[in-house]
Length: 370
Image (cartoon, rainbow, N blue to C red; front, side, top):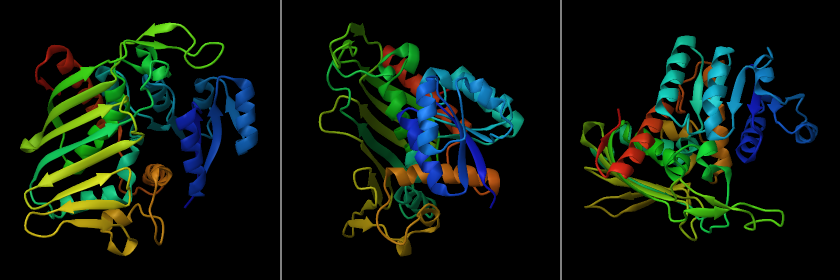
């Protein structure tokens, strides 16, 4: 298999994760990065042995050696960078959410289909072996007819009013925070496992900290008080295609929770639950037989689970799931392999669902995801 040359736009926390993951693949090269601070760009290139850097993403798009663009920028920048990358003939892997507006995401879907380029959204939780194995179980009918999908994604990193991040600012992160940032992951995971689109949403959202303090000269919490117009919390009732029901809660102010992601699928025969805290296990529940704590091993995985499991034994963790996601994206480009990842159309569906949840939270009624 030939190699692939990638460029990363935005090398903050998640950009570094992309960089580390693609370097683990062996056949991929980070050929260039885009960083606005030239001193930091030089330091990154020296440390990671990256051949080139650019200060403007348009210069990277003009580089004929770059085949794939990783868009790891803040949310409001996604639309123009993704659009310009497609127009420049580059395959695009975007961070979530795809955009902050469903009109923009719809435009990207149309452009991707018109150009025929590969597109992906970094919904990384699809790419755990346990999650793929669970999807395989559902496809094989082992849970019966799917009736309910429920779960949560809870964090505590924005618990205090002195906790601050660019995602708090709607002019940078968009009109939604908790739902768009972590809720989008859960909604994609639920849709992926159920194999069905979300059709209708009834949501309750809340901002418990209407003001937060920016970091000042002395450090955290001694800066100006900033009004907050993005949500700390959201819960939603969901109606999927085919009558499947769902419910989820997301929060960034739940003490003690770091990556508190869990999802349970209830069928007519059995239920199955996956939790990020124990990523190599599935709880399987039955009425007339003992419940099962299924610990993953390569010899026990179904076809889907084996497709992303890289080791002879032992659990896979979040960095492995990230590598699996990028590997699937690259292999679909290089070898035409069946994609396991979410593309721009799937990302657009989640943008629509989040948008509908915000409207429902404002109006107090069910809103169709249209």
